[in-house]
Image (cartoon, rainbow, N blue to C red; front, side, top):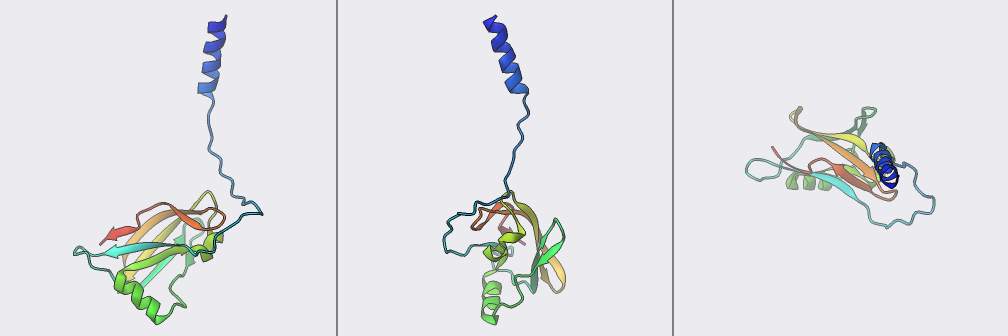
Length: 141
C-alpha cells in the first residue's frame, strides 16, 4: 500500500505543470539607491575602432513606440558617444517603459540614412533601476 501511495504521489508531483509567474507590481516601500543606470551598446568596426552613428533610436516592440535618447543632448555628449562608439539603449529615466517581467526593445543605428545595426533586447527593472535580461551590448560591424 505504501508503495502504491508513494508511486501515486510521485506521479502527481511530476505531472503538475509549473508556470512561471512574474509580478509587475512594485512594493510601495521600495528603497532605491541614487545611482542612475544606463544600458549601452558598444559598436566597433572590423579593426576594433569605434563606429560613429549619425542617428540612433530605441523602439519598444510591444507598441512600436520610439524612445529618443539623442534629442536634447549636448554637442559634447553627442561627440563623446561617436568618438567612443557607445550609445544608450535605455536608461533609468524610462523605467516606466518596461516592468519587472521585461519588455522587448530594438536598437537601430544609422549611417547615411542606412540601418547599420538592428539589435533586439529584453529589458526589465527591479523597481528601482533598469536591467538587461538579454541581448548583446558589444557589436562588431
